[in-house]
Image (cartoon, rainbow, N blue to C red; front, side):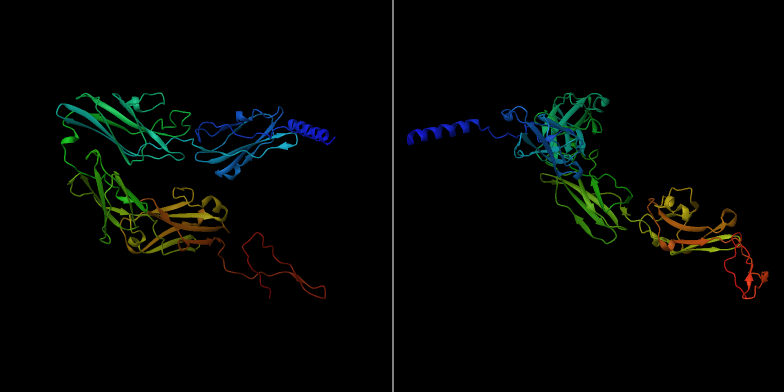
Length: 493
């Protein structure tokens, strides 16, 4: 009897196990890339979840990793097994999830699919040089370029394009055949030799960077369609092989307006060669200090600068055991900050109008860089505060006068008379002087502003006889109506 009962229990347990459904599946189909080339992406349930029962619904979730917080999003449970998330911006990173629901059974969230959205193309290469060389009977063109960056993903490589006509390279489509494709290996400078050229002809070249968006589903990622530098190689003469090693900087501007400045080698004067290195120098003419960089393959170098200092920049080149002499450019003056403010501004009311004058003790000291170009005097009222600020030096509505000194003076006093005919009675007028330097940098401050309340009635106080009467317990005065005249106070005697 016990054996029969045991067999019956085991059989029933097997039936129950057979009727228990498998757990719900929740997984995302791999799109084949982790750098999405678009602002949208389709999130699909993996084919491995085909075992889910009919009627299973899915919920999709976009979780912000590095993006705008408002992009966090979760759908409702739906019958579709895919969902399109949109609106991502370049460089934003998200984790995508899915989970399944059937009846009262809900799965866990799937493993995340991390996606970087790369929408914009990389920046064009910052440096491109093309030069030909003739060695005996052989002629070739050397293409040199500097690496570039992409705002979201990495650079996959560089396409080299060649044409006999300049405008063929003005716009590069993905279908255009390239001369060669050079994979990115992390180098700062790249070289390519084009041997398939004929002496006496003219060729045009451009180098176009491709990023990694959509790779490997797509062969290559985004690239800049236009704006890529185009260089010409005219295969006449001996070329750069016969010229000595040299380095020359491109001329700097006369004024440097930022706290750092990048110098560039002039490759039209001295073409780079494989293995060439550069050393850069900065001489502070104001303090006498000299800074020298380490040897580098980069055709440019960034220096820190200080306001009101004058700098001379130099460079030299080295190839194997040969080192060129230093070459220097003309000095450049650093003018980072806006000029100083005037010492004072005073506005004085008179019967004829308002006399405005401002004072500067030392005009040369107002700006240590490019120097003061002019002063602009503005006038505005209380009602015009919102339209006047922030100050626009091109504002002609509130501009009264522009003072342009022809030489710098000590104890300079500038005056302007604002005639009463153009002023409204009982109005508050503000006067502000703005100092502008030769680089159109400007400044203003509290001591360069004053205000005046216009009072066009300037007659002396007078006695006014008032009719009076007494009801017996006091005195009643008939006071004159002051709403239409300029009386401020009335004294009763």
